[in-house]
Image 1: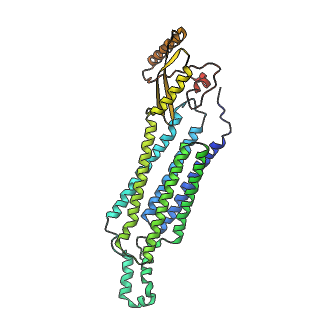
Image 2: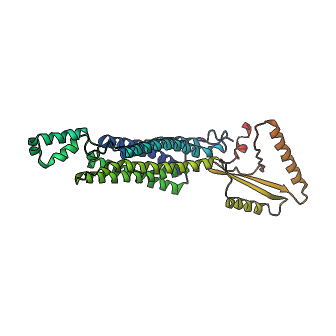
Amino acid sequence: MQPDNNAAPSGSSRQERLAVALSFWVGGVGLASMKCVVYMATGSVLVRAAMFESLGDVVSSAIMSITQSKVSDTRDMHQYPAGKQRLVPLGVLFFCAFMCSAMSSMAIDALSALASNDGASEDSEGGAALRRLFEEKPEFQKVVGDKADQIIAEYGGGDGSSFVDSTSVCLLMACVAVKISLFLFCKYVMSVKKSEIVNALATDHFNDTLSNSLVIGVMIFLAHADKTGNKSPWLLKVDPGCSLLLSLWILYGWIDNSLAQLKALSDRRAEDANVKTIAEAVVKVLKGSHLELKGADVHYAGEGLRVRLDLRPFGGSKASKEIAELLQAVDAAVRESHEDIVEVDHQIRVESAPAASPDSFAWVSEYSSKV
């Protein structure tokens, strides 16, 4: 029996796809474009770090979109009966490597800016030229009056902190509002359908909200310091310093995320609590039969669990012993048929048994003609 590939997607699946699409087009492409405009207006290293983070959001959302499409596609389910559960952690791990590389580069650039003394002078070359002009030509100083410092800051070509205006702050506030909205929508989708894809996007939106808020705070602080005439050389280190902290924090988050994905892909054994729960359920079903549970092997397969049960006949049941011996012979025959066989799974089901979840190996009963 072939699965119905033309069946209408459920409401929760549509919401999952909508969350991924909004994250890509609004939270990725849209915000990256807005931050690019702010960076060109301010030249801030911190804004540049946030802009590259949004470019990473574009890539991550694209990866999540492709992954979600492949996972939900049932046309090739018979080729990937359990392997599709690995696509999500594999896609997230691929993105983690990209983000770790990008954030490492940003952290190195910020550290270089902190260690450099090139920005220690109060004015840039253009600012120094204007200041010297006002000093050598007092008549110009009389014309502009007390606005000389403001003119130097605006037209001297400094580090760009003086160009942080209300438009730039409003753009970044709009970024924060968008990220908060996307985060709340992803949390809503998570309440309807548990999805690791949407959960990863929600975490990313939350982190982006914090980083954008930090950018706004630093920009307002530097603009206020410049407006009040604070010329401390330490102010030149605030932008790269915060950029370094932001990059390291984001880098730590993605490293931790990548380790979690590696753990999901490593087929590690499940926790004892899960094994105990499964074993108790099996023992309850086998009570009064001629089979007993000798052991349960439970380990992760991507986002799911795979269970191997060691069942032994007892009580003198001839039929149970014959079936066990037959399965042992089948196991040996399969291993002898190909040298690369690592594990053989058996599944015995009565003909009238309902089909199990499509995420398990029950596809054998549905695609028996292809096996």
